[in-house]
Amino acid sequence: MSIVAYIIRFLLALLFIYAGIEKLFLPYDPSVFRTDATEADPLFFTYYDLLQGSGYLYFVGFFQLLCGLLLVFRRTYLLGSIMLVPLLLCLLMTHVFFSRYPPFILFDSVMLALNFFLLFSKYKEWQPVLLKKQNSWI
Image (cartoon, rainbow, N blue to C red; front, side, top):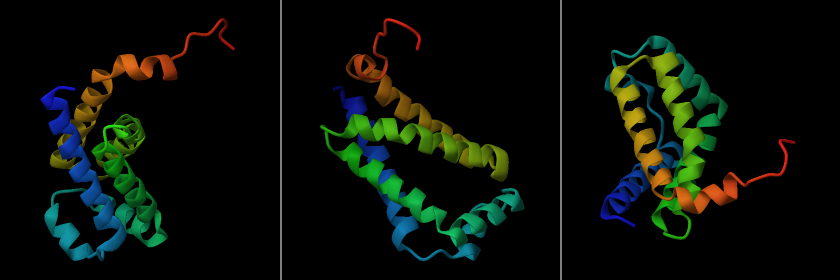
């Protein structure tokens, strides 16, 4: 594996391990969160408060932590990278439709692009498993 892929794996792992720990174990303070992105649409903060109040963010945090940990190990990083695709798409679409805050959209887009780089650098490994040739369409 190239050094670039190792660096991307390491950065994504650190980012998602931190994000997962933050959601699972650190107390949520809405005032601090709102001051970090004052230009975001107020609807986004209402949406985020709803997710926090319902406990859904613990679910997201668990999977962020899990994916980050899977990215650390050579044997499991491909699984972690595959699991990150729907998570990153949901994060990106949340910012596209709710926050409408360009720095968040750009950050999530870069994370998705880096993850796709990891995935497609190992295309020959996962392609036979996920895209198996079939004799018929059904």
